[in-house]
Image (cartoon, rainbow, N blue to C red):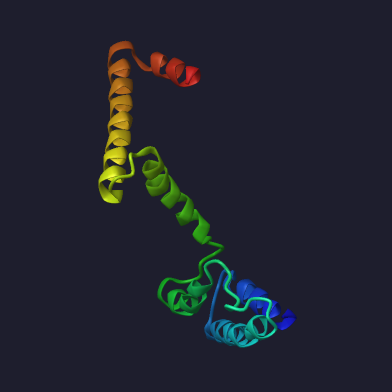
Length: 142
């Protein structure tokens, strides 16, 4: 178990490097293979009968290919995109009537866009009519 966690942490530390070369990518591939080999202890010892599966563990197999294609991730975390997904999809779904995912979510997002556009138009109208000072006062009040 300790060897599996060691291999996982080593993979993590190598992947977070700012610069990668063929040696670091080979080390990344080797530590990933070690992790997949050693993680079976969780299944055989009965700790996790269905296998050991960390969140987002499947994405590890794509790291080497993606680093070759796009360069070092520089600490990019997939939870950033997950938080955007929650804001863009899950929250509108929770506010909707939940009859159809696509329809409910798109209507909710359209309403949010209309509110945003009306706010922008109102601010532009205030700016044209009263000048820059009212915008500053409005932003301070909000």
